[in-house]
Image (cartoon, rainbow, N blue to C red; front, side, top):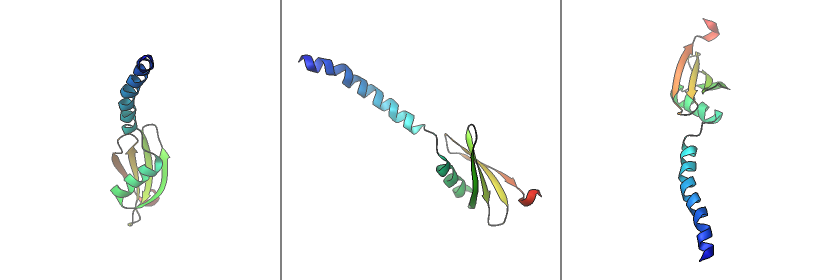
Length: 90
């Protein structure tokens, strides 16, 4: 009986901490590969470069039309926003 009473606080901690850890995993940031996948889905082009910025990834892509598109992918939500650039700065 005494051993069970000693285990009770440990078990209680496990049950309280586990849901919090699961919630943290859901809020984890995405990696470069996932950011490139999200950008590719949005733009339908070839990924040229992925740079990590403070709160997002900047993905440079080449569309089939020859246009270069820069896409920002939020590192937490995965939301994609694009900024089109003309090829060769024109």
